[in-house]
Image (cartoon, rainbow, N blue to C red; front, side, top):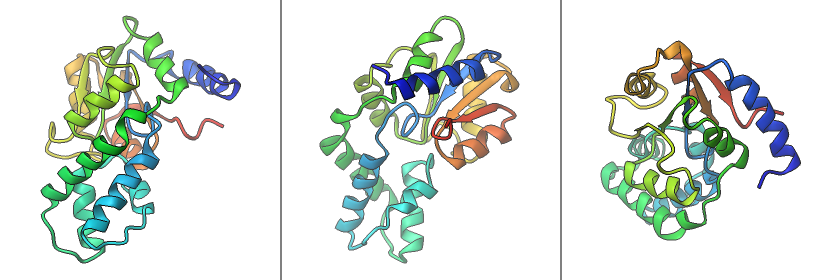
Length: 205
């Protein structure tokens, strides 16, 4: 259910989305209200490696594939570890402790559901496919999109335009007719580089 404030944000998004043929949604922090949970999973994983992680790093790297965030943690804290093992452990902690309590960001979810069958719908995320499938199921949007682009589907992740361009190609829609819903700068940078419209769902006030 949407609050009064959600309804105001929803109405703004309706107007922004109207001219576009395809809508591309980020997941973490955009469709799903789970950034705090992801931060907690990163902090818990880093602690196992003896790292006292400042979770503001996760804000800086919003939208990056987990493996790229792991590499950044390794560089920034000057700790050498297997970034693939770190990434898998972080995903496991997130799934074990947090994923089932994930809630949708109501006004963004409603935009997606309202446009099923009217506009093409895509999901573009830096998360792993296995984690995303669970998250999308928990928040009630699984099966309501025509393409899912995630970590590993393109050579480069956000802020590269590659994930967005792949989604547009899969949907057979020209990039200029796509609108990207994001909550982080890397995703916005990727959308701009792809020649797409964009909106920061956390900056609608």
